[in-house]
Length: 230
Image (cartoon, rainbow, N blue to C red; front, side):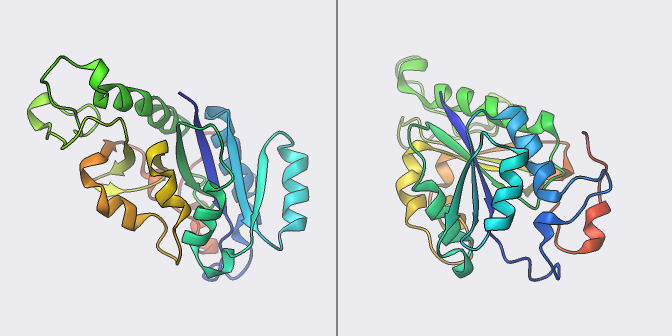
């Protein structure tokens, strides 16, 4: 399976009071630099979605990450949904995507590896060819016991994967290829919440001990909220 990462870096940073993507973390790295270093250490295919006017940042990132793909979302000012949809339209040949937020540099690398690898196991578990005849497909939480496994209405291999910490949903969120058409139609500032709400039976949660899946950089004080693993 070819699972890629889409990094949304087209937000307006209104609460931060400046460009938080280029704010400096305690380890001396930029917020977006730290995020991309973690993403690229786990995912081979990475697409970064920038604002239309981000020529300067694009040039800086090309020097740091020359092999990545970049896309300038023309309607990024209208909300995250527009940026996400614009980015998904650029993807070809991926079996699934994990959607990252550029202002979340505190997710641990081990968590990203688990999420990436879980997409393959979830797809196989839900596949009709990978289970005994007459057995139901699975939408259970990853690593939960069989007794907690609800059955789905169909045997499709589509999946949505959400990491949770202390029962709170976080990022990145993964989507199989079957949801790309819906993702391409998103608008507004709610991201993919509507898609997740409409496909609860396809949604798998993965509990992690990593609070980095919940922590974003919204204010200058939040730059110091967690030690970085590299």
